[in-house]
Image 1: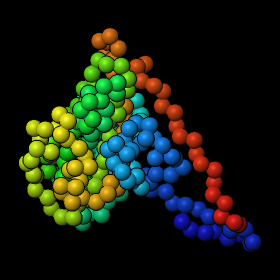
Image 2 (image 1 turned 180 degrees about the vertical axis):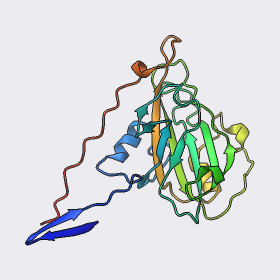
Image 3 (image 1 turned 90 degrees about the vertical axis):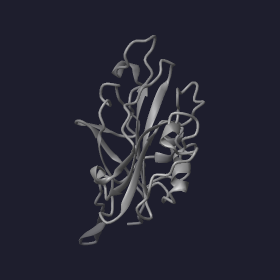
Image 4 (image 1 turned 60 degrees about the horizontal axis):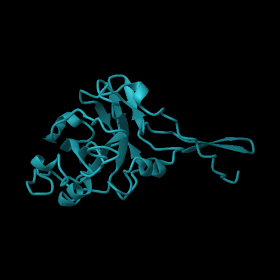
Length: 221
């Protein structure tokens, strides 16, 4: 933030990073998609910038199965000298109406230098989302954590790769097992389950409604 003064008038200007979360009730968004407090219990202050081709994901953007079949480009505000973990989970597995699995891992990359995901170790390779035929929309959540140092893949009943498609996988348990930070960045998209076997398409998704900006703060000037 910086100030510009013209006579007796002072203007406050804010330099906004593309990774910043501003003018948006992120907590309400995450509660709506059953991410908070079911998946995470701390609200990140940064956004994971996600692009599938030229289409940007913005906190619940409706996507199609075709659009997400390949891994996206991702970035977040990072210290280039630090290591990070990215996980993608589905808190509604296997469906919004029957989420008995709770979480399903679709991508898990650790030891990422800064935000260059190509430098990381893929503990679970990218798996294209595969929504079921049950009704309802399904969210896919990207969460980033900062690591205390280099980590080695652990095999146990909670986070073994063989367990990522059943009721054992939990992002919070992974973070605890690896002594990760609180989540530092987050974003998500949604896919509506196809009805009666027809392919999912834009018409199957609820419309994306941009968040209503908060009123400007009164700085007393």
